[in-house]
Image: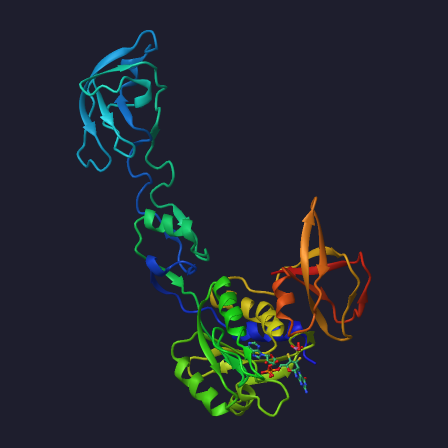
Length: 402
Ligand SMILES: Nc1nc2c(c(=O)[nH]1)N[C@H]1C(S)=C(S)[C@@H](COP(=O)(O)OP(=O)(O)OC[C@H]3O[C@@H](n4cnc5c(N)ncnc54)[C@H](O)[C@@H]3O)O[C@H]1N2
Ligand code: MOO
């Protein structure tokens, strides 16, 4: 049987980063920068006030105190957004608001709380240190500084600085558009009545959510039945708008395996058994002129989710232009004995807890690959290597946090 590592290596060898495109800031969340972004100007672009108060020449108010206020005439108001170039003459002050440019000549701002708030003349009751409450130009960024290097994933704060340096679009690897398609004649949409022999379709909801968490843009197609021709027609129709496709179900040894039947003849999608539990049946390949990766995951709900974490998530990282490899593990102590089939790497569902810096993991009850409720109660996968069939309570194990 193919190993887990070999299957992942094959997938990562076939999948490429999406070509960088100009992305508008409005849709750049989750994209990966493909350019170094430098600021064309200093930030802040001008010296400005950090507080509402009065711009002064510090020497004019030296010695001001509660018992000896300094009273000075107020010449004008400078509000945020004032684009005129202002100046403060010796012996005068200007009222100034937070974010407003500091007038020439002023070298400190006195917060309004230190004064009587006068608008014609003002009594100042504390001496500001030089530079008080002034945000200097270039304090955050100097003109020409790279604020975000290529390879940065754009999150909320990164969007902020991109806008803050005046960018409207950036060159970035876009979020991969992933279509999720379930197969199985027994599947009905949640929210509709269930007949005998039917179950509510759940994999597409899990997989769409997992794609979004992995930085992709997911769209969910309702389940197609067990007819390979219908499956092929659906796939053909969606290929143009997908950067990757995930299917679930229809790939094992049954009489009705639409995914396998439709894709095997193409010769570009390989169906194999991978030495893992759950998730033994796997398929992967490339479709059409655009070489769109397709991940045909097993239908059992736990198997499809585990397969996503092991293979699709790293592939999406690569498509996003990010470092890609096997899931990160941490070491934890198992609180119960574990069993695993010989020759297969097991990914048991467990609850990972950490106390005083020591991690422990407890396998959940219900380790069947159909036991979705047990999966929903877990927060980690316990990895048991291929050559291990039993582990005692207290053994150290590697764990993949979910
Ligand atoms: N003779 C053999 N039978 C099976 C083998 C095998 O090697 N030889 N492998 C088993 C393993 S392991 C798995 S996993 C499954 C995988 O089968 P498929 O990928 O073809 O999946 P289906 O048969 O379509 O479905 C399996 C199971 O999962 C339920 N399912 C499917 N899709 C969904 C969905 N979208 N939402 C909720 N539940 C879903 C489906 O009803 C089945 O119960 O094959 C074993 N058999
Ligand atoms: O190995 Mo299958 O993927 O669990 O039941």
